[in-house]
Image 1 (cartoon, one colour):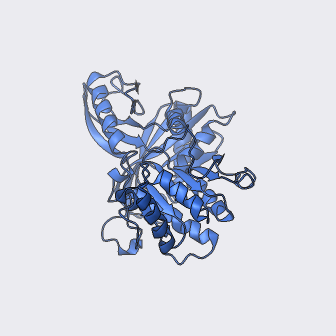
Image 2: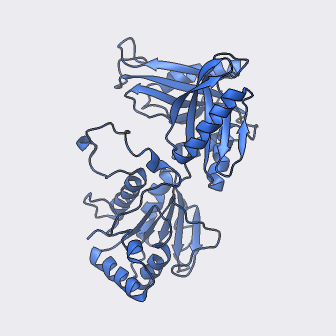
Image 3: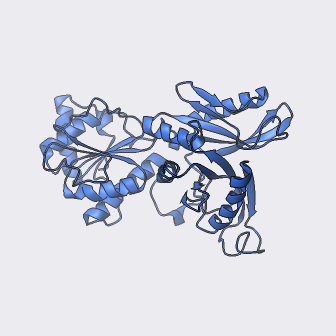
Length: 389
């Protein structure tokens, strides 16, 4: 998600009037990046994002310069299975066929794809786009024509061919439920075509309940990943911008008090870490029943179990909600320092929202990107199964 954030920032620079958005749309075989990876380029050579480990970017830049001249979107293809040269084989370390969509973007157009991404991220609404990547007739549709669908029913389209427009809308509406990027065949009035379909996942929002020094690396890592990070503390000396310059929001609030404008959804995660049992209890009481994708509590298992037992006895918490709390928070990576502990907690969150176990990749028997496609859905993040004991 940081990739999209960087692309949006580049497109909003005052001197950037046009851009090319390069999106990896299909991979047959292996590739460093997966479908959906994207990169924005400007005529003067600036870029944000990536589509490979660095082996394709320079060649894509050359293709992009031709798109700037023609103002016509196109699809380029790389076959990295051979040994012909450093771009199409030797040196890439991958063995697959890759297709990349190059879209000409008018940055002043409020409906361009990058602007639509920005609107969706800032408003936290779910959206999806179906983009033409192959057309049988340019009078029917051009590469880059698209339909943009929002979860509230709004539709924005540049498609005029009735069969194609209907197919694109159906595909985009399906992508609202499963945001996994994919290529789909479609029918137009002139024959078969292809669409690249992707949902725009709502960015993860991390609530850090406790503004101690050990929250600082959590903020830094979360923001590096492109997450929206909120820090809460009941102490005026701790809830200040100078302590957390990278945080999106810093909230001075009583323990367990959420601001009215904050909507907790399935793309919200939280970590309770005040080092004060009374304050942590208040936060767990508030958060455990909310539809969070993840709720972690810093501290020992014994401490958290005691905290939860108090809430259960008070009737302030149901057993099912107590079972959703991850404690001790974080993966078992031997973390000791605040930075290492933050890394362990961030890694556990990433595993949970991705539907993964968090073990070594070398132990996987299937492809790295082969599971949990629907787990990335904006409304379908998996939940913790139990307090670990």
